[in-house]
Image (cartoon, rainbow, N blue to C red; front, side, top):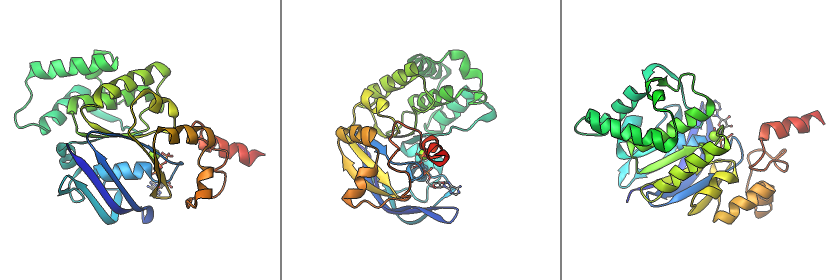
Length: 273
Ligand SMILES: Nc1ncnc2c1ncn2[C@@H]1O[C@H](COP(=O)(O)OP(=O)(O)OP(=O)(O)O)[C@@H](O)[C@H]1O
Ligand SMILES: [Mg+2]
C-alpha cells in the first residue's frame, strides 16, 4: 500500500499564495472526495502533487511513502505511481494517441511492452471506456469533444496502472451515460488503487464508494466528514460552515451557490439584479 502525506503545504501561483498550510493524507486503499468553492485551491493542490512547475512550493512537505517528492519531475512522480486526470486536458497536435500511450507506458517499465500486450491493454481500455478504437490513431485530445477528453484521461489511467489517482472534475462535460461509464470504471478500480476525486456534483460521488469527504476552503482543509457531508453541501452550499468559524476566501455571494450550480452564472445573475 502506498501513501501520500502532505504536511503544512504553502503554494503560490504567480506570487499569490493559494494553499495556506494544507495537510492531508491519502492511501492507495481509499477514495477521498475533495470539495470546495470555486477558486479555493483544489486544482492547485492536485497540480502541485503532480509537479506542475507553475505552482511554487513556499514551504511544507509532500511524501510518497518515505520519499520526498517535491524535487521530483512530473515524469518521476508518474513513475512512482501518481496519476492526474486534469480539469482541462491539453490538446497535443502532432502526437498520436496510441504512440503517446505506448511511450508513457514504456517509460514506466524496464522492458518495452510487446505489440501484442499493448494491443490487448489498449483494446481492453477502449472497450471499458466505450471509446471507438479508431480514436487511438487520432492526435492526443486534438479536436476531441469535452467529454471525449475526459474519458481519454480515464483511459490513460487504465493503461498506466497508477497507485494513486487524482481526478480533477472528471465528470464536468460528461453526458449522463458517460458519467455512468466513468463511475463504473472507477468503482471497478477502487479495490486496486486510491482515488482523490474533485467534483462539484453529488451525482458522480453517488455512483462510487467514498471513504472520506474533505472540504478545501481558502487554501486549507476546512472540514472532514463522511458521505452525508456531500449531501449537505449539495443542498445548502458552503455558507453554513461560516457559523462553525471557518474562514472563507471571498465573503460575497457564497449563499446562493451550491455544488450543483455554476458559481459564475449565479454571480452574474446577482449582478444583474
Ligand atoms: N496563473 C495564475 N495566475 C493568477 N492566479 C491564478 C493562476 N492560476 C490559478 N490562479 C488562482 O488560484 C486560485 C485557485 O485556483 P484553483 O484552480 O486551484 O481553484 P479550484 O478550487 O480548483 O476552483 P474550481 O472549482 O473553479 O476549479 C484562483 O483564485 C485562481 O484564479
Ligand atoms: Mg479546479
